[in-house]
Amino acid sequence: MNLRNTGYCLNSELPSPVLHAYSSDRGIYEDATFWNPGWTGDSGPLFSNLYDLLKFARVFGKGSLLTSESFERLISRPDGAGNPDLYFASGFIFANGWYAQNPSFNGYSGAFGYLPEDDITIIVYTTQSEDPGSDAQAFKIFKELVKIVSPDKVINF
Image 1 (cartoon, rainbow, N blue to C red):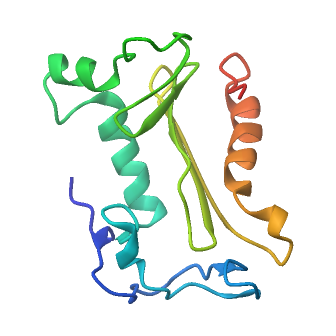
Image 2 (cartoon, helix red, strand yellow):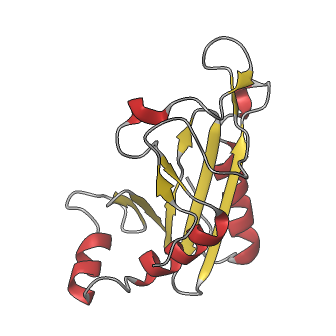
């Protein structure tokens, strides 16, 4: 996929430039940018930038690295999922035509969505402010942007 700014770090070093994250997880509001992500297992040590995420969104959303059968299996609604327009499969939320994720880690809050029907990608990342209630704001912003760019495909959860 030629993702030149995406990687997996085994320590707390991140390539520059970096969006600084702030957190009050330890009882004080502090810079959490370089906290070691090793405790998170597989997902925390990943890093990328908006350009690479845009490329990944299209490749994932179109299933272009998979056979059509494999892609259908990847995005298929799991048995027992009640709502055909809202379910979780293969690490993604499937909501009203959108493929989305909402990672949150060490003060970072993200939202990533791709609407294959219209080839639309929205990516939002935020950090926590001194107000602990500001955590995970990226997905709220993402949903508001979805209302603007695809008013017939809003995400209602």
